[in-house]
Amino acid sequence: MRYLHTMVRVENIDDSLKFYCDLLGMSETRRIESEQG
Image (cartoon, helix red, strand yellow):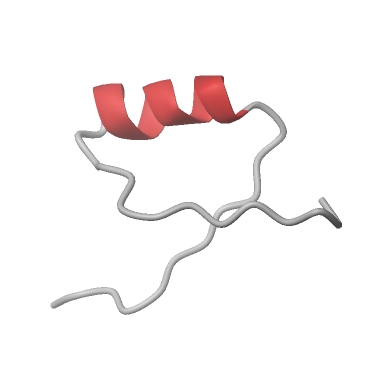
């Protein structure tokens, strides 16, 4: 099974990346930053 789209909005990107990448073993493949927040 493959996910086609996943988006997670977070308040602290650094803490969130540590959790998802370091603890869960996931990797960030693409990031889109919005001026609207």
